[in-house]
Length: 439
Image (cartoon, rainbow, N blue to C red; front, top):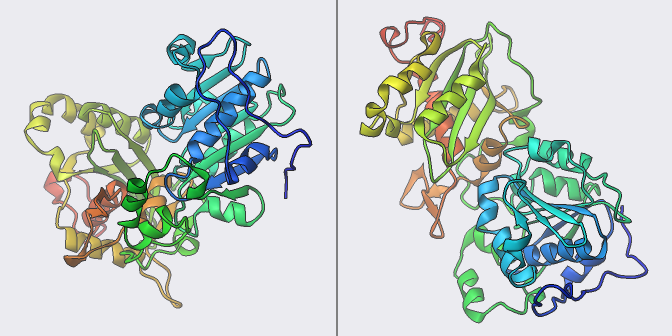
């Protein structure tokens, strides 16, 4: 396994003389191992509240002080989620008091240290920010949100050469045991360090009591730190080895369509579907983001679909409300480009989930009808196994688990897309016969 314990271990350092000080941070427990490890890839995994993020950010800051002109990066899948998570900890607990505002340059989205070191901030929803940049140490928060392609891109950026070693360090709460990152650690490609609640002396009895009140797989993951599958998993037909395929561009003659689950504060998701001549369906692309208005979403979908034989756009029924109708002239111009209509998705949840399960179904003598390109649809692949039964209606999905909203945006888009293919809208609505395929 790569990595070694340095002969002169990393130790806490005092802040610069020009900055007001905070209490000196001292890593505890397994976080000390995180500070000492010098291998190229390391994942700090453990239950909620063990001080994973604080420990990683303190290490990043410590190295920025020790090595003038080093370049670091704080990253997460979505840039918007960093503002209320890692950056709050970095600004209020890690950096010297009052320095966050003085050191952070909003235009370049980076902290500039007095010794010339730089720590940039970026979301992997904008990969151009980091794709061609060189770093010494990269910290990723909630790494289970990333794809393998995201991880590989970050590894390619470890080439600044100012520090004696270059490292990608990440943290996460445990997820499904078949998550690609867990598999990478099991294969010895990435070193996993498992943190525990004893590593964080600031935890209160009330916080631990809140974790103890969880149940099922959430308790096992967030309290015990176990990589376990979701208890009461709804889509039991799902199997990554069966349903995930390598990315490819569907042939131009295959009918294609999109389906969108609307969101603004919560993420919105659009999936692209293609049907092969043998009736197999491939989900070959996704858009997954938050903070975009209806018309902005429409332009993004149209842009991604340019040059493709998309015959139908299926929309979340909530898109067909007064807000959308008021914007209809501009929305229609986008969605109806090249004669492709936007139609209302079927919101029959139970029938929709059964449609998804039928498409996923397989046995020893037959392959599933539905396959997903993980490299292009990471959020769909990530969230399918997280869906659980509604305890009040076993035929439906749970909207919440332990009081937290279920991340069902991608599976809702999947439901709309498959229902539209099974029960396509009338030809008069679409003006295209290829989609119905004789049904």
